[in-house]
Amino acid sequence: MTASSQYNSQHAPLGGRLNYQAQFNSQGTVTQIGGWAALNNDVNQWLQIKFSQIFQISGVATQGRADAAQWVKSYKIEHSTDGSSWTYYPTVSYFLGCVFRSHTSVAAIKSAWHVLFIVRINVSYTSH
Image (cartoon, rainbow, N blue to C red; front, side, top):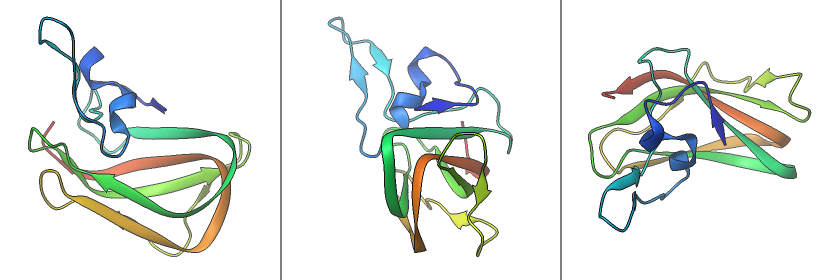
C-alpha cells in the first residue's frame, strides 16, 4: 500500500488495511495507529493498493479509526491493470464511506473489475 502522504510515521499507509489494529513497541509506545492519515486535510489525498496479481474486485470496504474520531465520509475509486492507465468507477460520482468511529462501510461494485491497482481518493472526511 502506498499513499499521497502520511501525517507521520505512526500514520503510514499500512495502517489503512481493514481491521488493522494499532501496533506497540516493547515500551508500550504506539508505532502504528489502526488507520492511515494523510499529511494534509484536503481532497487530493489518496491511498493505493497494488495486488500481487490481477484480481476480480466486487466491492470496496472503508473503516473508521477505532481509537479516534477519524474516518472518510465519501470517496472516489480509480482502478488499473497496469498502473499507467486509470479509470474511475463510472456509475457514481462518489461512494459513501463511514458515518462514525469504527464503522465499516462496504460499497458493492455492480460489474466486477479485473485490477492490479486500486486507488481510493478522499472527497470528504472527519477530523485528522
